[in-house]
Length: 344
Image (cartoon, rainbow, N blue to C red; front, side, top):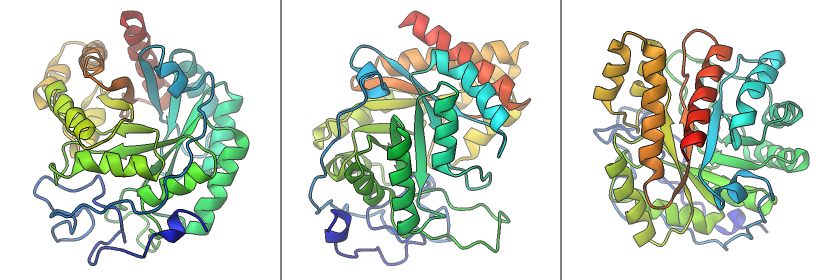
C-alpha cells in the first residue's frame, strides 16, 4: 500500500478539481475559483494536513539542479517549444542547455504536446537536464503512475508535480478533465517512484495566510524543492519564505523571474490568476525604445533581487519571452541566464 492510498478520501466538497490538499495556485485575487463562479472552498482554515507516511527522498543527481544549488545559484529555464515539433525542441534545448542548470518542461491546458516521457527523452538527447511538469488534469491515477515510471526510467533530473490549470473557455470543450489526484498526492507517488520532486506554490494567491504552511505539508508528502509563482516584489517573496520557514518548511526555493520583451509575452503573464508582476516595471519595458534590451535588463535585475532573499537558491526564467517565435524566445532567455550567471 502506498502513502497516497493510506490517506482517506478527503476531497473538499465543491472543489471542481476534486482536491484534497488545496487550494490550487489559481485562486483569483477576490478569492474566486478559477474554474467555477464561486469562492474557493479552501479559503478558510483549517489547512488540510498531510497524514500519510513521509516517503523516502532519493539522493539527487550528482550534477543535477539540486546538487548544483548547494554550490551556488541555479537557473531553471522554462522550455517553450512548438507543439509536436522535435526539431524545435533540439534548437531550443541547444540554446538554453549550456547556460541553464535545468529545463522545465511545461504542461499546458491549451497547447498539448508529446507525452511527458517522450519529451523528457528528447530533451536529454539534445543535452538538457529535464524537469518534467506532470499535471493531474488530463490523466487518471493509472496513467500518472505510468508516466512516473517512464520518467524514472529515462532519468529525468526531477519532476514538478502540479494539480494543473483548468482548461480555458472554449479550449477542447468536449474533453473531460480528470483530477483523480491533486499535486500533493502526486508528489508522494513521485517520491515513491524514486524521483526528485518539486512542487509549486503561489505566494500571492489567496488565502495568503495559509500558503506558507502548505509548503511544509508538501515537504511531508515528499517534495524536495519548491518552484514559486511570480510575486510583485522581493520584499513580498522574503515575507513568504520567512513564513514558510516558521511553519516548518526547510526546502530550498526557486523564485520565478518574468521574462517578457513585447506586449503579448507580458500580458500572458499578467492575465494568469494567482500571480503578480510589478506592473510599473512591465510598462517601462514596453515603453522603452528597445523593449527586447529593456526586457532582458529587467529580468536580470529581478533575478538578482530575488536571489538575495534568504532560502532562494535559484530562479526560474518563466514566460514566453518573445511573441516572435520559440527560437527567438530561447535566445532571450539564454541571454538573461548568461548575465545572471556572470553576475552570480
